[in-house]
Structure formats: structure tokens, C-alpha cells
Length: 631
Image (cartoon, rainbow, N blue to C red; front, side, top):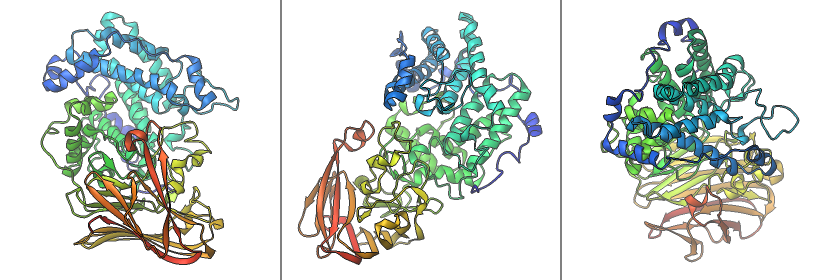
């Protein structure tokens, strides 16, 4: 059973309503085309120059090759990057060249745009190999080109070509009419026809009980772009929009009223952010008559992104999220403005000021175009909202800082949930500690995706395992994956003196761990001597000394005496303290990092501190405390 507000979209607007509400294909004009020089020349000089410079770096581009053997390489080696590198360079280049030509308007970039369009139309398949489903049991390493599949980047490519057709169509036709003919033919065969004909793409959520994830609005947003810009048959166009609403209904129905995103903040852009893209397309295509942004759930889904914000580019990074990553500034700002949430808009504005014009020009045209024309006010000064207390009951995530509106001092985030969440890590009971916006105890995050990441060998990857989260390992047994491995007896409270999450994590471990009960409390104490406390109160079936409490940190651990470990940050030293009568710091293990996703976040290495009992123990209550080195 899906959660949240069911029937949000489709039952409110049926096919007959769409005939009346949607603008005709001829009337739909979401953004100025290259011929409307006044609108493009009215952009700020900084934006114009940034767009032109980005395009100039691509003049005369030798478009990266994507031969069959490179596509087959993924099936042979499991390496995603060798194909995806040149694949995404092609898309990024065409996005930037199209915008550069629109901004300058002199034809200087047009030949390179044409080469990019033709190169993509020549591709046998628009999806990356890792996302192409098996069409049969043959184990073929190449896609079935006679049976188009719609996935994330099939749809994204179709949308990119549709925008190029819309923005530059008249200039392309002046060079050679077969360019736009080719776009229309390829998009119709690869996306428009299969979207209308098939209901069995898993991301649609129309069959089966699997809850749709970010693929649902991400694919749907690009399908809407292609139909709204290219489909000239109004009946087919209306049918597609009605179906898109029905598909989106399945996604929204999976959310509870607090808008919590169990996929992690990195995927918020592809989940709630892509839903917002869809809603904006529906709003503009109907001249504002179809507008869901007043609904409470849509507002709450947007607010998730600032509720897990720590400081600068740091976010509470549960699931497949990186601990530090830029957010899409223009999207966040526009979302906040549309749902009338000044705090959400402020976060987008701050992200813009951190990165400048590049923040508005980066990404797909579905985002870049509204960034250029619908972000008035983003340059105004703003401060991040920094809420003091956050509780997202639906995904059992809490966050707390010492004071409202400031990233100074201690910050704590913790989670319960279960081990079958979207982009799951085995991490029930995981917690993070930051100080003055700097990481102290961390969630490592996710390494670069490979074939193993989304296979049945996922939990052989160390980043997915509970032993490499700040969690117990008991009798050599870690948490297991699956929905039945979950938190229970969850309670949360917050006031001026403290914020805490208490839960039983025993159910996240299999029986062979020997755990009878294990209650974990993650607490931020406010006041004169603020600290974070992690309290583990447990009972085992038999006494054991094989109990390991992992603590993951990017800080070089230094002994500061019995029961005290120093963790230095750029703004001061923290002390991790524990009862030396009960526990010992059994090991400090450096973990070298060479992963292309992890190394830019953490540097050359992380550390895993392992605390163990001094003697065999069957029942205990242990407290780990993190506080200022002067506390």
C-alpha cells in the first residue's frame, strides 16, 4: 500500500479536462527562442559572458566516440565510468552549445550544435549500459535497438534534443531541414510511441507493488518535455499528459505528510526536485490553470533539503548520498518562491552566491532555461535557515543543532528506519556529529557506482556495511539487509535543553548476533556545556567480548589520556570520551581512499575507531560523549 496523498493528480484532472486546460502545441511557448533577441540580450552581462565562454571552449569539438565495444565493456568488466565519461561529455557539451548560441545569436556555435545533434541521433541506444534492463535471457551486452526502452537518460536525451529543436529550430532548418526531421523521427520512435504504448516500465509504478523512486518523476519530466514540445497531435499529447499525471500519482503516493526523502539529499534533486519540474511543466502548459504548488505535501517535500542541511555544502548524507555536494541552486530557489517558503528560497540563493553564474548554467536545459528566466531575486543577500530541530517521522531521521539560525557549535543527525530503503545502506541507528559546520563523526557515503552497486553483491561493498557506519558489530555479526531488519520502539523529543532519538536497533541484526535487546539513544545536550551523547543499553544471550562499536571519522584520532580521544577540526578540537573501566579503544584503523567520489569529499583517508569491552559482557549501558576539548 502506498503512503501519503493518493489520487493527487489524475482524479482531479481527467482527459476531458486536459482538452480544455492545455495550451495547443502551437500556442505553447515556455521560453524565448533564439529569434527573440530582446529576451536573451536582457540577461545579465555576467550570465551572458559565462554562457558564451562555456560554449567557446567547445568550438570545433571532436565529439567523443561511443563504439559498440565501449558499450559492451560494462558487461565485460562492470566498470561504468569508461562509457559514461564520454557519454555525459556529449550531453553536457550540447547543452552548453545550445545555450551559447541562444545567448549570442550569431550562428557561431551552430555547426557544433548540429554535430552534437547528429551524433546523438546516430547512437543506437540513448541509455547508459548500467541502466539498460535485460531484454531477454541471452545475456546480450548490447541493447535491442528494435525494442526501445525508456530510462533515465533515454528520456533525458530525448528532452535535450526536443529543447534544441524548440530553441534553434528555425536556424537549424535554415541550414538543413533534415536535422529537425531527424530529431522528430528519433524522439517519436524512442520515446513518444513507447511511452503511450507501454505501462510496464518499472519506474512508472503502474504494475506491481514496488514503490517508485526518483526514476519516476525524473523520467516523467523529460517525457513531458518531449510531448509538449514535439507532439503535434493534440489527442496523443493530451493522452500523454494524462498518463504522466497517473504515473506521478504513484510517486507522490509513496510520501508521507512530512515530505521525508529516504533516498538521501543527493537524490532529492531527482525526486522532489524532478516532481517540481513536472509541476512547472504542467503549470506553464496550462497557462497556470494546473497548479499543485499550494498543496501542503509539495511544500514539505521541498523543505526536506534545508532540513538536512548542515553548513555550506555539507548535508546529512544518509543512503547513497555524498557528505559534501553542491545543490541545484536555481531549482531550490525557484521551488521556494513557488511554494512561498522564504527559507527554501534562501538556501537556493546562498548556494547561488557560493558558486556564481555557473550554478545557473550547470545541468540539463529543463533546469537551465528557468534558471535564466525565472530566478529574479536570487542575487539578493540571504542567510541559510539552519532550523534548530528536525524530526521526519516517516523516515525516522532527526537533526539538531545548538541554536536556531547558526551552524556554530555541535550538530547531530541520527536515523532509524529499515534496511530496504531506496539506495539503502545497512545503517539503522547511524548518527553524524559536526562542529562549527565541520565533520567529526561521519557517514562515509557512497563510492563511485559500478555494476556491483545495484546487484545482489551490493552489501559486499564496505561503504554499505554497518561495520563501516558508527554502529555495533556483535559476535562478528553485522546488520542485514531487508525490510524486516528495522528499528522499533522509536521515540523522539526536543526542547531547549536537548534533542534526542531513542530506538531499538536489535531488529536490524539477525538472530546469530546473540542480541536480546539493544536500545540506542542519540542525544544533543544544549546549554552551558553542550555535548553529544550516544547511549547503548543492551543485553545479549550470553556474555561476549566480541563486541565492536565503530566510530567513523575524517579526523586524525589522538589519545588524550584514559578514555579520551582527541579529534581535531579546523575550528577546534573535540574530545570523544568513554568509560575506560568498561571500554577500551581497541584499534584506530586508517582507511585509504582512492575512490573518485569519496576522495574529493574526505581526502586521502578516513579512520575507523573501534571500541571494545574490557571483559566479556552480557548486559551493559555504555555512553560515548563528544564535546569541546575544553569541556
